[in-house]
Length: 114
Length: 118
Image (cartoon, rainbow over all chains, first blue to last red; front, top):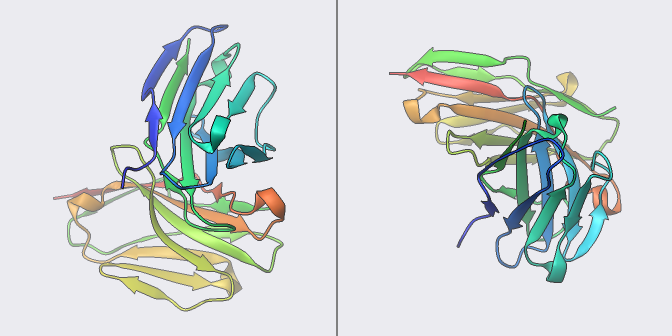
């Protein structure tokens, strides 16, 4: 079974540019999560999809971040325009079932905004 | 407020030593779940264990063991006879019962970087 895959693994962009991160969850997993780790801080929850619906987006930092999951398969997270404080590692995770099933994480995308 | 504290930022041990990674949590919920994840150098977080708040039995899996104590709000992780392959960052996480969409959202500690030297 293929794991959660994220693309790109690294991205370096200038302040003000746009970046789109992609996540392919494990096939059949309805739940998809985005998390972010800023340098030296905890991994923080961003949002949660169930299939194509946003179940909880309380962790999204501001309206420069837009997540989509068209068709309930892969998801994208767009940052537009990027700011310096957006630098960090963005993790995607998926899970099957409901409630508190263990999450399967991808390798993360390391975003550097200069 | 919910919070997970991993006071040990970095630990270095020599192979075959036992090592315990501490995790202290805060929550107002009576129903919650605790997790440990391992992040090897490749970057992905690998699930190790999940415990719910009603099950305080300690668990052992090979060289790994977990000690859950509600009285001290701790969920510590011990590696016995550590090996170089255990070198990684280990994260403790909390998931509250929540409601609707917030179920399953993890609150992470800052992680403990474990280095096992040969």
